[in-house]
Length: 265
Image (cartoon, rainbow, N blue to C red):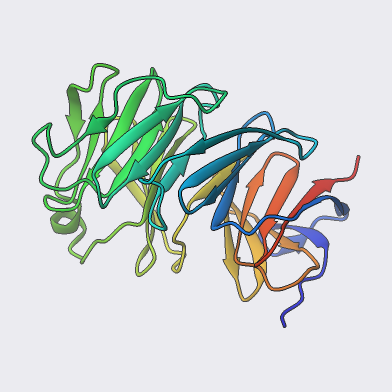
């Protein structure tokens, strides 16, 4: 069994910061789930087959949504805690939930809207959406009325590589697509390609406080997207399934429980 030490180090270029953060385990929830996410209010969302559970910042379950569309491949986006997205690529259907996990609108069926295949969906600013078309290798922005506002170039042709992204997210007026084989790709809010971040193996994107979080050799690393400094999070505990980071909290999903860590003041 793999263990991860609870230490946070800050690296600026090749130098380590003289001040380290300390972390403590504040909650341990007895839940067996596929993965978890935190919203900006530190509410926790846990996905298990057929259900999404919501816990407040004290670890109390406050809402639950059940639907057969929620399978192992479901994508959950809690960027906007007032409009939560649940997307099933297999069904090509999108469900939007309010803060109480009640359905807000009619479900969106992208096949019925003329798309042959949509593999990814994410929240965009101004109540819009980003979708990814893997047939044409294009990142598409839809308005709040689901009208196409912009399309990227054919990314595979433009970058001259096989491109199979597994996640998309918009943060701070930038859009990030990750392809585990090639790295993370940054775009502007019009879908124009900006740069490649050459970190491979990232399947799910976690960006908080201008840092890209990912796991490498059992350690959570955080790359500053502005100055490229590095921060290492080593959190002690049993072998984890996955993790999520937001502001001053780290959530680690274990086989039979969820551990929540918080930075000490």
